[in-house]
Amino acid sequence: MLIHKYCHNIYLFSILIVAYSIFVCYYGLNRKVIVNNNSTQFNNIYSFNNNDNNTTVTSLNLIIAHPDDEVMFFNPIINALNYVYNEKTDNTNNHSDIILRVVCLSNGNADGLGDIRYHELHNSLKALWSNHDNLQVHVANFTDSMEIYWDSSAIDQYIKSNNIIPDPNPLFITFDERGISNHPNHISCYNYVKHYISTKNEKNNAHALILQSPSFAEKYSSIWKVPFILFRTSANANTITFVNSIHDWIFALGVMSQKHYSQMVWFRFLWWTFSSLVFYNTFTYI
Image 1 (cartoon, one colour):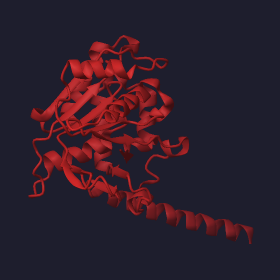
Image 2: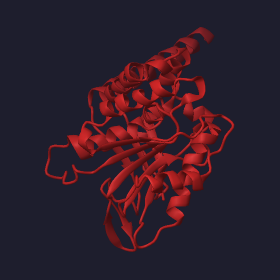
Image 3: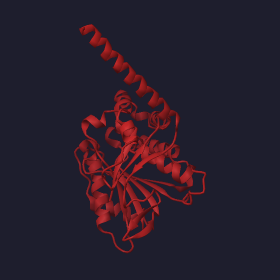
Image 4: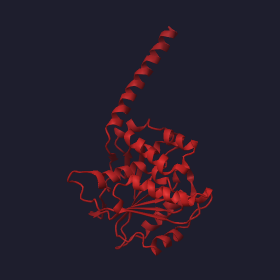
């Protein structure tokens, strides 16, 4: 009786694995941007609501701490934005002139590889963003450290003195207050964006998509939560989720391994196998 029950459980588990494998294969073969959006404010990638008026996004501004953050943490949203702004061929894409600015606040020089990583960042973004004419990359010289928080006023001075964000309706994309792993440099990116948005006025109508830091269990759940994400409706009216297909994940892994070759030590492969952030990003809109 015990053996029969054991075999029955194995049989059910095998069916579950086969069904899940079929889903993953189907999901991987259907390369498309999947956006789970129940937001009442962020209507679409192109615009947001402002006092009941639809305001066009004038630029996309990814604020990161180190070269390789763009592909290790933000690839799903970059893939989605690149698709809707640069690759869609139907008549709904009237915004192909949008600028993607990537502001990297350090050159990742903690191990003395700053010059190499500077060029790696540029090469990575050229692979991820197909319209190179509308790509701007700015690299600051804040200290790459696990122990230092960067001052928001100093970041603001760098941005303004170089006139990096001159347009009126920028959309920021950055980390949240936990910085994925409580990294102080990541948290400093969030603090700066929060500071910038707090100064909104007639000439500055900035908004932001803030990458939610998942729990430890979810962060290392790999692809396993993707089916639940695809079929759920977010209860939070100000969240939006971008999901990579297997095809997109393979492409992003190729970008990481070829363009950020100085960073491809053994534990990076573990990240690309087990991290959920290389498969989907969930953002809070503010």
